[in-house]
Amino acid sequence: MSLSDDTATRAGERPVRRRRRLRSRRPVAVAAAVVAVAVVAAVLVASARGGDDRPARQAGAGPIAGGSLTYAVAGTQVSLDPAVAATAVTGLIDRNVFDSLVAQTGPATFGPWLATGWKVSNGGRTYTFTLRQGVTFHDGTPFTAQAVKATLDHVVDPATKSAYAASLIAPYKEARVVNDHVVEVTLARPFTPFLQALSVPYLGIQSPAALAKPVADYRPVGTGPFSFVSWEKDKRVTLRKNARYASPPAGASHQGAPYLDDLVFEFVSEDATRYGALTSGQAQGIAGVPPVNAAKLKSPADFSFSAQETPGLNYNLYLNQTRGPLRDVRVRRALSASINVDQLVKNIYFGLFPVARNPLSRTTAAYDASAESAFASYDPAEARRLLDEAGWTTGENGYRVKDGKTLTLVWPYWAEGNKEQRDVLAQGIQAQAKLVGIKIERPTVDTGAFVGTYLIGGAYDLVDVSFARPTPDVLRFAFASGNTYAKAGGNVALVKSPQIDHWVEEAAETSDPATAERDYSSVQQEVLRQAYVVPLYTPVQLTAFSAKVRGIAFDAQTYPVFYGAWLGG
Image (cartoon, rainbow, N blue to C red; front, side, top):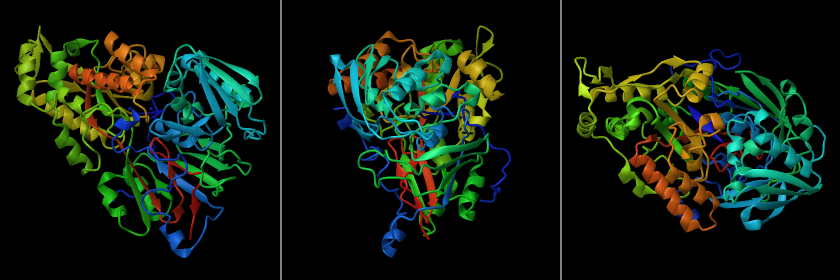
């Protein structure tokens, strides 16, 4: 399961079982605390890593307008509305359709975009934005302060059923239109992550005219470089150049319309099929390069390859501490100690995905390496000791029993959201847990059951998820008591800790970086000490493009953006 700003019905990413156009080829301060930050210095501006501009420089060529680029991804759309959806695919696609009020330019710095400037007053509760003039939505209506108000009101409206965006601006109280080009946003309390939240595509500014239409008639209408053309469910989304585009962020590589005529996102679940699509020329770029094939793309002149660690929450296993055996911290720590994460991750991912020992990625501000000492790392003897201490004895079949019940944990397998061989990793975890007497059941469930019965209904013991967001506030999203899945949050461990709540709320409200860093460090240590989470690996954006593709940029979440992309000879 992969949620993004990564995780719509967050049940998200369904595989494509048949392809029309792609043929399978099966043989084949807080900021100061940043370590190896993956945030690009200027969002939408930097060239893609991997040298894809080298041929153009050698030939002395400049950007060429025209052409269509097909980009194949592992997920699919479940909703076109970024205020509703939360999948990584939605953020990737909608970044090209919607501009934001501000652009993230560093770990904790922001520049103008649709807002040319802003003032913060009333102790951090009031933000007054001055807006760009002369900007037009794809439907021809003007961008004004009313659009900002309509967008934010839409996000928090319960009828929208936001699966993520609403949680980003939880303290939002109201927006007041001062005039066409000035809007005042009031928060219920100070909230330092507010600007970062406004920079993500899930809070991209939408046309009020489009939002006023019935849900059944919804089409995404923004001011971005590409406009929406069509959505063929489970197959592709097609976007087209916005020839009138005039609102790139400050410092963009060029002004005006994008170079590409069309941008097509193909939904291709099978790794081998995506790889084959790139190498055969059916796609000009792919996300989720299979680790087994990555080495083949690192040296040929025909391709460019990029590997970038994703900021935010690692791919973690969350332990529901509200039910069954996992209510006992000793059982939680025993499960953690039974898993040889290092061995599993290195064997499955060929060293491309870093082993995680912290719920937070090391590329995220306020990451605390010292917190790893609280992690119950691999030690099967300690796992057995803890289970003995908790009263679970070994039964005839090798599984632990207590009061006549087998120590059984339910970990639903949502096949439609599987990627990065996470099913293979789960099989390894299952086998290792069995060696100390813990039985893990993996019922295969469809999207409806996964969301309704399990995530909302709480009928699970374990859930696996990653979440991309370049701010340590993601810890509030994952562990604050009120941020359960049913309330558009990511607290799938169902943690109810007044102490953690205090830390994450204080960190979000304080203007003192040292206080925030201390609080975020405390959260990392506590969730590992209590074994609410078993870190597995840091997701890495493995992307590859044909050498003909130039000018790709990567945003603060390390996803490619296509405003400056063009096709060379």
